[in-house]
Length: 380
Image 1 (cartoon, helix red, strand yellow):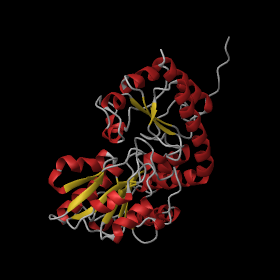
Image 2: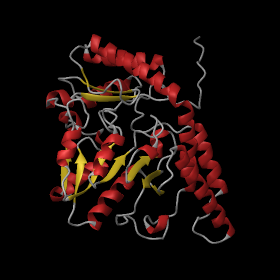
Image 3: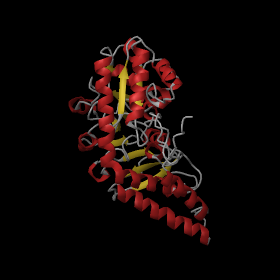
Image 4: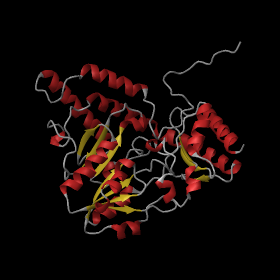
């Protein structure tokens, strides 16, 4: 009789390889969420003792979170997600400055990119290069007097390409442009010093680094936008709704865990990802790697010409693996990603794209099994 292998209930399924979509919540972060929910349940806006206690905790947690990221010269506005935070700035900016336009990088998330379709007369597109980077000269030439805001990714969610947002933001601000940086894939995963990045707005979602869902935020150095949500006077009147104190506690705990383990995890995931990519290139020479060895550790975007990404996801799922066809918001769509097409791939190549993103529960054994599952299907 086979002996059952003990399971560590604090670790996620090692076959889960979709960390860029959502990171399994850390036990420590869940514990913080539960404890804070029990202890600081009152509305921080209430003037009674319980409310004042919750408000004090909220302010303490905000300071802890901002200190961890060396952010001392602005405000942290809590939101439900990076999607809400990005929408807040885009909608609020366009309403505040009706005569101005915005410049949107082509590899941004749909929570920013949507503006191109909704406001075609008020948006311009900043294209990416075949290597996924943003050319500084093209950025400079795209900036004009009728534009008010530039929207950039810190890390592309589909390819893991890391942009030099410090340099890009300096270019924009030196020319009088406001800057929105989507940091959703960056916080917790790579070193981020917000003091070094001259942004006006920087957004995040805490479930992307192991906290609970429905917890996001907006670091802001000014409030030159109209509020997206109206109601109460929370967050300086810029975002109505009772603040998510327990969600922020979870985010603080998760960010601390990530920063404590970041160096070792980056090295480990870099090794796993590099080995996987190199083996794919050797065994399946027709495959095209869209990610970069210097990109987000453990994220591999690969295109298999002649195949469909959703079919590869389905086949590997039969073996227990969880991967994606690109960003999670495109998981059920068959049409090729605009970001992959922008890299110069044709539609046949781009349609066969999958994204593999590893994290703290990924093991060398699970990566080996995934490689075999992909190879057996593509090479069959």
